[in-house]
Structure formats: structure tokens, C-alpha cells
Length: 284
Image (tube, one colour):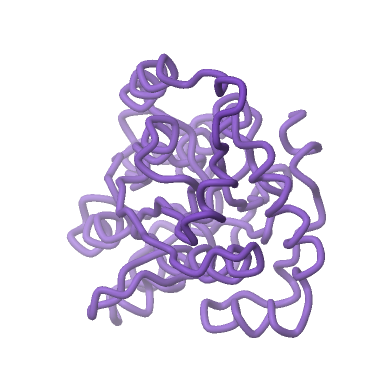
């Protein structure tokens, strides 16, 4: 959401600028945890990427991450969850600038992001795949397959970890079509501006269902096991008390019948339960 993302140059500049505003709280100041428990309201930032976080046609914000956020914050006495729609590459700068209190977008925990935000422990794990034209005419089953065919274009979301995965597998920058969201990925493949789009298995399957008979998500994708994505809620570096409170609730809830029932509508099941903690993932 499940990307999942590494910042591009513009995002890095925004983070640097936003970072100037991040500082230690004055002695005696109210923490974010204290504020949201006092007001009963929390703001989450999300980017439109089904099934991790998205807006339905009637304007409802849902998805695996927002629904988990609602359940966890309710356990902390916070009943109102307001959602702020943000482009993926602006999520971390927006969090650090105070536009919202937590990123609930299925964001992957990576060492680079751990330097910018305080992640809760992961709430899911997932692997990637490709969206291609029906029949997979270029026989693409890995990032390496894309790299081997110089005339092949791969659509990735700007700021997504898939961008780095592709590059590390030898895909050249002139083969990469960076787009703002998953809808643009689908459009690029359908219009044949890209031969494939890369993203999480659930996202690409969702795009295939939406895209009709012209496209499909490939069933066999060969990738480095290290690329398995672990998605988590993310907080400002100063908000470790909030992160710790959320972790305590998550530890007791993940894997329960209520948790699995909550995420089932979005395609998640027991196989997606995380096998690693954030401390391990942040350590590289």
C-alpha cells in the first residue's frame, strides 16, 4: 500500500523540508496519544490503493489499514477516525508536517523509512506480482524478465519499493514508467503504454478484476524472498508512546477471529500474518 514505497527525489526533498519542523516536545506538552485520547479523534493519512486503503464510490474510506486503525484506536478509547487522502509520495512528508497523526496505507517497513517514521509492528506480509495484457504476450514472470527485453516498459507507482526492486534486478530507468497511483498503472497497461505493472499480489489481482478481459495478474512471479513486504501503521518519530500503545493492542489482537474477520473482505487471511517484527526489518 503493500507498497511499499521508497521516496523519489521530490519526496526526499519534501521530507527534508518537513523534517525541519519535527522537534522534541517541550517539557509538559501534551503528546499526540494524550490529545487523541482526550478528544476521542485521530487523523489517518492514506493513499488510494485497494485493498490496503481506498475510497469507495459513496465516499467511505476503507481497506485493510483503515479498518485495522479503527479497531485499534477504538481499543485506545478513540472513537472518531478522520481520513486525509494523500498521494503516496507525500504520505511521510504529510505525517511529519502534522497533516495527520498516523499513516494507515499498508506502508512497507523498510530501513530507509525507519529513519523518517516510527513504525508499529507489521500487520501483514505479502509478495508482489505483475499485471500484464491477457495471455502475458512478453512472457514476463520476474523483474529480470523485464530487464532482459530492452523494449519492455514497466509501470510502477512513484515512491514504491517496486521501483527499487526493478532497478536492482537490472531494469533501466528508460524502461520504467512512474505513475501516481494504481489506477494509472491499470490505464498504462490497458493503453499499451506499459507492458506490465508491478505491485502487491492483492493490488494487481484487484486491478485485473477491475480491468476486464484485456488484462490479468500473473500467477507465478519469481522474486527475491527479501522483497516480501511487511505493512504497518506509521507514526511521527516523537510519537513513540502512541506507537507503543498501538503495538500493545495489535499484539493481543492480530490473528484472532475478530482480526481475521476484519481483514477477510480485502483478501487477507492467516497466510498474511507477519512473521517478522519492525525492529528486525528496520535493521536492514
